[in-house]
Image (cartoon, rainbow, N blue to C red; front, side, top):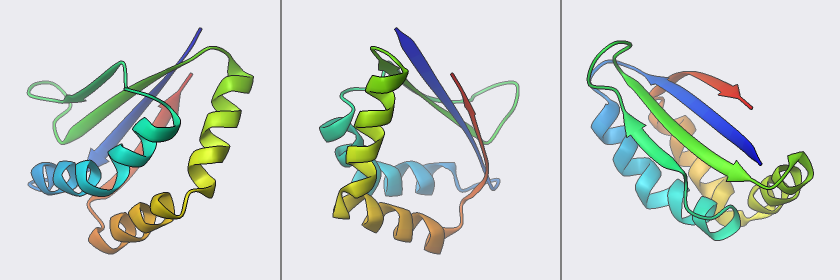
Amino acid sequence: MLVDVRTYTVRPGTGPAQLELYEKYGLPVQVRHIGQPLCYLQAESGEMNTLVHMWVYESAADRENRRAAQAADPAWKVYLEENAKAGYIVNQRTSL
């Protein structure tokens, strides 16, 4: 099993707007190609303005295949465009 932990830092005060944008455009595409996330969290203490997604894959090859399918989905491209226009995310860290 491989767990992909994605930590996003958003501009202060934009967490709710980023979550709304992601839930509308990004999450449905990811669920379609990757499945339900292990967890989907928002910081209430510690490093604030942080959102965390954890995704589980069978292996590195499984992750590569699922993420390639997601990247090829036109709906994912719409999410990326909307996300870039909004500009809420200032940093992303991915750990496997």
